Image (cartoon, rainbow, N blue to C red; front, side, top):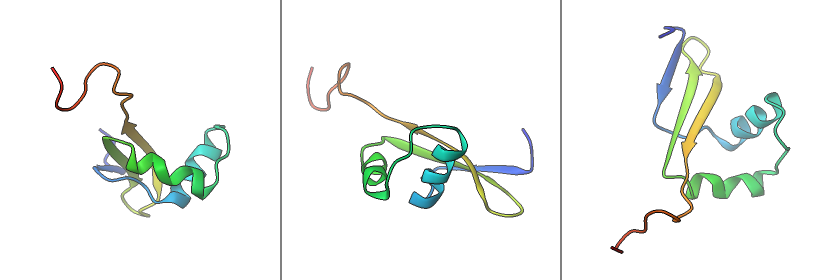
Amino acid sequence: MDRRYLLEHDAPDIDDYLRLRADTGLTPKTAEQAEPIFENSWLCVRAFERESGQTVGMGRVIGDSGWSRVGSN
C-alpha cells in the first residue's frame, strides 16, 4: 500500500465528487443531481493524499434491491 494515501469510510464532499467525475471523463452532474448518490449508497469510501488532504478517489456500494430486500425471505 502506498503510504502517501489514506482511505476513510466517508464520502467526499459534493465539490470533490463533481471534480472527480470531471477528472475521469464521466458525464458532468450538478450538485443537485449529486446529492442523492450519498443518501442512496450503502457505503462510501474516500481516498485522499495524506500530506495535502486532497481527495484523489472514491468508491461506493449501491444496491438496486433486486437480489435482497430487508425484511423479506
